[in-house]
Length: 272
Picture 1 (spheres, rainbow, N blue to C red):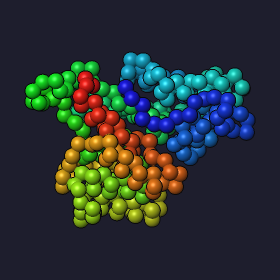
Picture 2: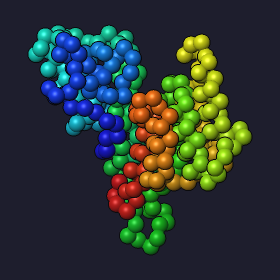
Picture 3: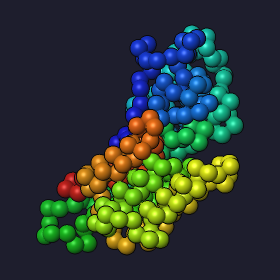
Picture 4: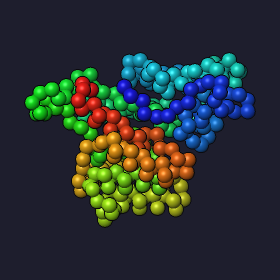
């Protein structure tokens, strides 16, 4: 299983609030809004541990639950949180683990109060061995295409409004898939750009077009498709980060999904 999101260790050297508490923004740099300023609480960590155990049969080594447990234990020792305390945002919105089936495995995304904090590649245990025989055939594993990676992003971060950085990433993905430098009228990139422009003028989030709206049928909307390669993922990540104010990729978003797909495809010569 491969981890796909940046995370800071809950150590004494990390940035902390004025009261010394370790906050969500300290542990998960991509977390935004009010949640970023909330101390990590013990019941938040316990809930994430339960969610990971239900999904994987155990907690993920070095995963979000482990990071949250370490931070919450420190916060409890400092008196910043009580042992039975849960953050109000997580108490109201909860934590969750979702999965998107892709050829050869699953893309698993973990959320705290609706914000993605981790993404993993979980290969299937029973995936067929690739290579070694007579050049493919029925035993060869199918690689993930750019369209499939975009649809996975639409599932993982589907409820989030389309931003300029998303539109730029989708445009880069479409270029890599089709080999065409210009937006295709009525195509996926054009739809994403239109959504980003409209969202910038929308009065409320309820009026905004989401990633799920744009990417749910990505494979069909691409005039051509191809298997995701490392260079494709790198170009998409560059486009997304260049168009985001903080220079980071959206957790569970387009660049993250492309990177995960590239990792899965890179195992084409081994057992997944």
